[in-house]
Length: 307
Image (cartoon, rainbow, N blue to C red; front, side):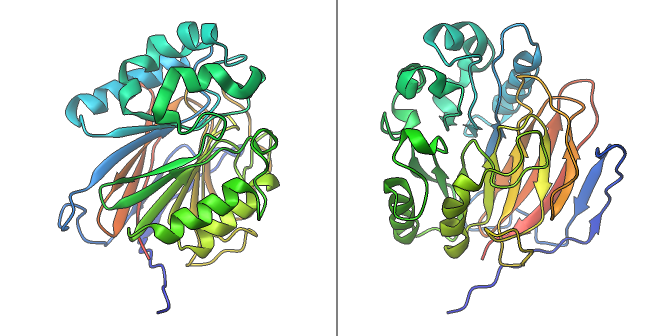
């Protein structure tokens, strides 16, 4: 049976100045998220977080704790580069744990390149334990509400590659094939598409392709230290209603980067403050809301539906 993604977006306001969008809001005529067989769940996401000498992790940690206080079943997707500069045990203890450690049990991480600056990212796996997936692999999946969630490891050279036929790519395809959930979200550190300083990371293209072919809805990334949302697109960057919506959320606390000329299909970008992405994952649909650090008012909101 052919599957067609349907996204209803009735309004979009993108006001750009110097490559930035001071406010973006998308409204939808989709049904209310609470009118579903499976209750909605909340996923909070950010990457590039714990850097000693910076106050960003404290700011975003405050946001996460505030939301968890009213929604204790929510989970947190930590999108890599969690403990600067080298992902050592000391870095985790001093730079990450004081601000994000209180909700470690609710955190599902993906490793960044800074974690692998220490051999095998051993302190990362020790810190998160089973929540980080098998040590030495770092990719795993779980079901959350009506959704299937996949965490991948984009440090490709450390785990036997990310290309088609690699152990991780083969595992991903088997995992997606076995899933019984209608909606799928994946997250990892290095984005395939980015308008930031690092730009596109093509090493992850085959992972994105596998997700696209399985009709996944959302990909979350970090690495570049800004927020960015892309329109629905395939692994080649072609706009398509059957595509994936990528969110880049490198605003977790470890400094902020400038952005360059917007990549194709980039809808909105922001780098004037820290923040987290709040996703409400419903039965067949979802909504997103970028939550800025206290004192900032910029936001990006919208809704979408699953295949």
